[in-house]
Length: 192
Image (cartoon, rainbow, N blue to C red):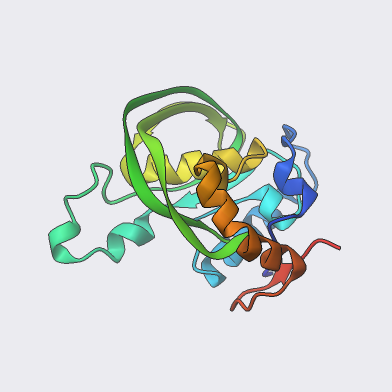
């Protein structure tokens, strides 16, 4: 089932999410719905707060980026062919490498894209959909998407990395999103 994505200005996007246990109700259905929601809105990642759930759960599918790269760009990122992964109760244990800029967007903040600096590599502890514990290091575009989605479960948004002047220039667009004055081709819910 395709779920509505909550818009910028919805309080849950600014909350730190809670850990869950294997007895979380209908978790496998929720994960399936999140994949369907993410793909139907052309996303490469989706975090539970974006579908109005305050739990430490996010999905990443960076393979889509590699599948859509031009032939000359295939070697641009070190993490090809990408990953498709569920992350539950994730905690970053290290970020390493040079910071690099990439033009990021967010399904909760539609039609705004900005360059954001993030580290090349992230190591995190997380559980998969079977609640098996993993510690893994990711780099390249996969690391970037993971860091972006991880921020969601920590109550942060990509626009928080922008300089104050840039954020001030975006204020009217952000206010329009909060008020629902935006047209997108996927289901959204707006703050009341």
